[in-house]
Length: 420
Ligand SMILES: *Cc1c(COP(=O)(O)O)cnc(C)c1O
Image (cartoon, rainbow, N blue to C red; front, side):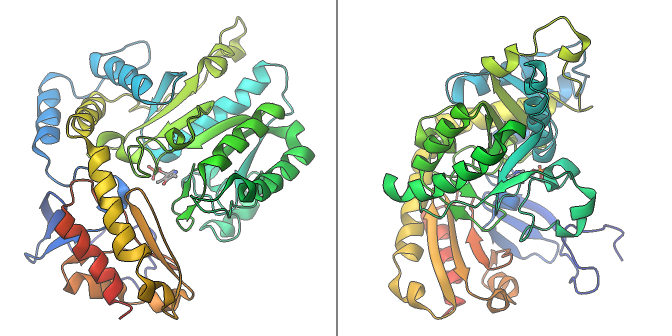
């Protein structure tokens, strides 16, 4: 019997978790000898696949030099270099990097920064946040409070969590014309108009609300949201924990819109999934508000493992591989297959169980009408050599970017075969 308490599992109905003993490329190997093609790259973070020789070597080399040291009052080369690289690759103007150890904590940092920013500017009433329905920003208490309060996983804790504001999730698809995006923006503005005096920041997963149901929207929505934030003196926070590092087809989702949010949070793909880490980036405007004489000007936050040298070093290597091996081109190829095999498949779209099929970058989802129709799909896929983990009404794939065309087509074939 295992003493491990597994995540998101119902203890009474869960089936025993198979043990993984290793992995190579897009596949991992089970104790039984089974090799499974991972269609979800381990919660979307293993973008280079398993056992990448350069990432493994970077960790080994760094381990021989320095495994860890506190970032309080000290620094080291991997942290300094990674901060510089993140400033270089993220949208223009995000010049300051605060490290932490997970996406949730990175978001906590962003929210705390936004509230303190307004405090320091003499607007202490701006202490609530504005989030979107269908949002998912993490599992810590502060993050739970900005996840979708109805469909999200945390409704049980409503009484325990701080109360924030929510605007309807955008409905205009990725390729919507600006006019149809306007209706979404009007709904967002209605909330801002009523509550802006107490709103510090608008949080969103730009273009792709991932864990809340793979809801995709238009870059025009991001542009419009930024203009509204400007008008109502609200900071714009992009949670790019899932969308960052290529998932939507550009390095960051913000790049589709050509805009710079006030704060941006990165995690999952940051280290290529090899170690847990996160970065919260801020513009000069946000950062400079913290320069002052009162004790309140200090940002009182400091995760023990922030800027961990092993994590920074592997993140640097991950980014180098991403650029040298032109991953954006690979992502474009994966996208073309996802579109051809899923989105443009008229039989799949017309299937009575299927509500919608959509794709963005290296992400595709078959949304069904009734979650019951996905029961057993994981076991079915495993028999075809594929690791698929659906949730709710969503059967999706977010493959590693090194997935070959043939493997990508195998994943889409298995997804479609479930409905055949
Ligand atoms: C996964 C995720 C988080 C939380 O990250 P953890 O590392 O699991 O804490 C936050 N925001 C988004 C958009 C995510 O996908």
